[in-house]
Amino acid sequence: MKPKLLSIVAGIGLAFSSMQSAHAQSAPIKFAGCYDLTKAYGFVTPQIAQAAKDYAKILNQKGGIEGHPVEFLVQDHGNEPQRGIECYEKMKREGAITFDFLSTPVSRAVLPRAMADGQVMLQSLVGRGDAINGDVFKWVFPIGPTYWGQVANDIQYAKNQAGGNLKGKKIAFIYPDYPFGQEPIGTLKTLAEKEGFELLLAPHPMPGNDQAAAWTQIRRFNPDWVISWNLSNMHVVASREMKRNGIPMDKYIAVNWFNEVDINNIGPENAKGIKRGTNVVGGQDHPLIQQIIKDLYDKGQGSGDRKHLNDVYYNTGLAIYASVFEGARLAIKQYGWPLTPEKMKKGLESIKNFDAGGLIAPVTVTAKDHGGGGKTRIDMWDGKKWVSQTDWISSYPDVIKQIVDKESAEFAKGSK
Image (cartoon, rainbow, N blue to C red; front, top):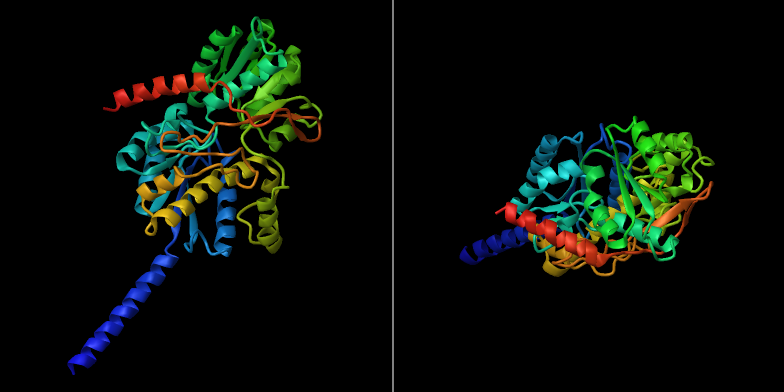
């Protein structure tokens, strides 16, 4: 009886072990998107969430990430910091491995909590510019260009257009008087002092429908360039004010949050000459988008409206999560399952020369540099399409590092 009993027990053990192994192989990886879907950022978050969900579906058709299905969880925080914190806590309970907020005020509110918890917080294209310092912000990953880096690249473009000398030139900065809009001001002031150009700060109140006073101020200043940190319909209002004040459209360089909807609302012909900084290749020619069209939308399995596929914000969502999913793949491949926050952190920090098949500028993330390079380019609307004006550039690295070191040191001191 004893040998038979031992054999049964061993068989049960093997079966249980096999079940555990199968469960481990099929356990999902959850990524949390706590987004403003209803208030300030509803013009961009649906496209980004749709892209992330579509990308997850494509990966799951191929067996997931290292054998694990991908789930993208989305909840609205209405751009309210407290609701963002509540979403973070809920998603943490549900087992999310990364947390993304796509809002500068919400990101800033959640950041200390995520740091204290040892949870991976994404901050691509929003939030604190100094969070690229991985020594201080160990759990925060602003992969891609920060607002500081992007505005520095805008100044480099203006300098190149001026033959390498900005002394005596005038640059106006128009922005909503709100944390997002205020983010690049320190960098601009530093660069104005370094390069010798005259800087005008022209804030306007939220929600951005009343920009008349700011544009009157800009007209009197008579700038060579206008760098704009406007969003969505604020660009349309700005275009009307520029026309009213006789300011040529080709002087306008927008932040990356400027899409095809904005062009249509301004009018394709009226928008001719307008420029934007961009972090991602637009259009539908990229192989991943072609695959998504063929394998999802042509089969009625897409995650949202098909029209969003021709929106640069959709491509932005693919770009953000291409890096995140690559980090998860590297984490599991190098450190095994289960995927923990510490492993996810190390996976992201081992991304090297990754360009998502040409969708973004090559990104290399390390334990010290959580930004990955900060490259953008300038595109111009020619009346029918966006035309690149520069290669991918990352300018004034010494200036950006100086500001990052100063700001992050102050954060570290204040958080002790």
